[in-house]
Image (cartoon, rainbow, N blue to C red; front, side, top):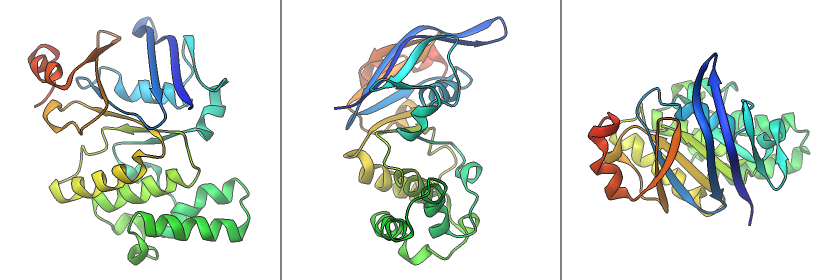
Length: 226
């Protein structure tokens, strides 16, 4: 079973350390929620785990693979899906990554059709992503990420801009991929955390393992939003 492992991770901007000697392990098929106040480094942590940033010290790897090669095994979904969509239609957005990897047309067509059905996007396949609701956009982004079959999925406050119906759409999509990969979900909202196998708190440059109840209790201490 593959694991996404961060060992002795340190990183900062200028002379200000953001993380100090941090360790984290995410297993395939596991759902972990990471709670942290705004500006505590959640997005930066995900960029390090996905290979988009290089740590100052320590390493991040999956089965010995690290650096930019992590991008083939780790998918990341940002707060605003508009920032990672470029194609003119939903089906082209899902196909884009496959096309860039040189996937054969018949395999690409089969994969795209399967993902459209899996994420209930068939009726929207010819629509421009920009015209969709927030929840629909997140499902399209999830489908596009899953086209490359990553072992791990990192979600950067994915419900921040969603209303209740759109959030339910997102959760349906997340549950659809949960059995296929390990998931790390970050949020500043303890009472909006999804059900997970593990919970942790990011503060002071360190990750602390907590139960769900413990995280709610320390809400005031970390200054996060309810």
